[in-house]
Length: 323
Image (cartoon, rainbow, N blue to C red; front, side, top):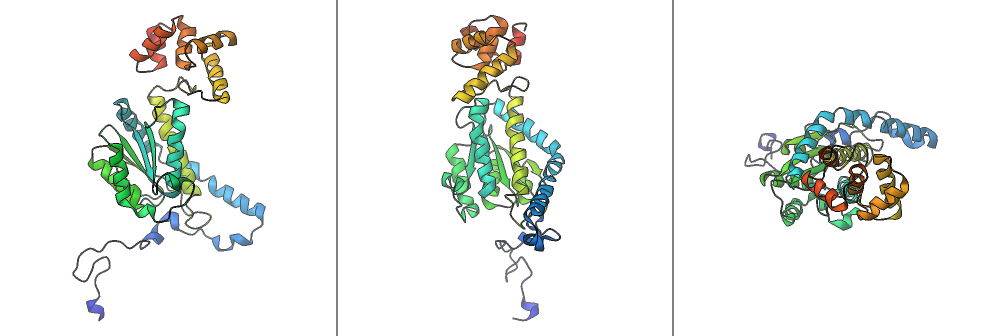
């Protein structure tokens, strides 16, 4: 074949666009780049190396700060869908998928969300949380099938999480969810990512090259954790699942959480501990109800009815009772 017979880059011999080869454009991603001076880090002393890594990690909050308007817009949109009964679904592979599963798993005990209200999907299935399932991130069909199994609706939100912003599993999840009318959010580590292009809301945190080139479980993963913290926490604040800075919807399923429920009730009411204990006992350990009992003098049934009338928002239920 002569030079004139060579197909154009990105197209086959017939001139048709050719699918991108795995890794073809990976080197162009900032998250895959190499830091200046990185070639010699294994020659550094351990303390010097720790200081270098810590210095790199300190850049992450500033990178997240740069995308806070995008985070806030996404949170408001997610909360509006969840007010309609929708679910929040995270979809990712590897570290990104694990962080989504972690965030989803922490919502029921922290905010009292019903099982299945916040969902974490990881490429390769639940087993991939504790053991790498190589190749699963390329399975677009699995992402589509898992969303279909959830019975995704227009009230739901799907957040695709991917450091590169081009992981096939996350990209397919966002594309399929958007086609079904669900709200879509991209959380990526590279600006201008295909994942961002596919979603209605794009949160692209430019964390840059990693201490170990391409090891996106480091700064990119830290940024993902920070943003996922914001997405779930701020959404639950908007939904009235907190009272000030108090987790009044927590589910007290162990001794530590029962002690926390007691402390939260006391902080919200300034009541004496014997009265707090009596209120929590009367309401089956439900903190919001106990607070209403202590601040309004209502009975357990009245507290439950007031919360139901006000969509579970304690502040509104208190205002209704003049407290």
